[in-house]
Picture 1 (spheres, helix red, strand yellow):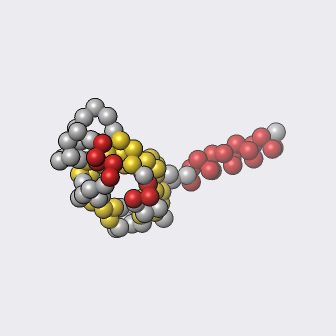
Picture 2 (cartoon, helix red, strand yellow; picture 1 turned 180 degrees about the vertical axis):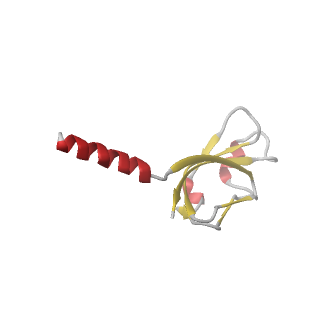
Picture 3 (cartoon, helix red, strand yellow; picture 1 turned 120 degrees about the vertical axis):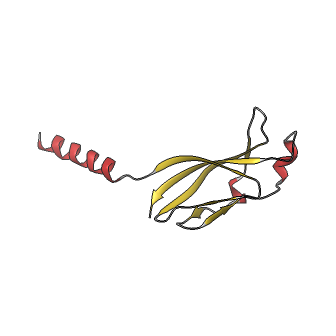
Length: 102
């Protein structure tokens, strides 16, 4: 019984201190997103879209691994994957970010 109580306490303490959140942010090409103070962002996936019904996955190598508080995530105005879109103007990025406290 004691080991069960210890196990339950450990599980709940891990859940209480886990601070990772998944966010979805979008930004136009050439724009930027600013990371809030006290958190870090890790890009899990990035897509481009020009208003059509589909998104095109872009490589994470176009971006830094980790963005820290008050840093800017700058989106490229142009990248090679944009050639796959019908319209090249008004392209925006969709980011799936993992946010955690510093």
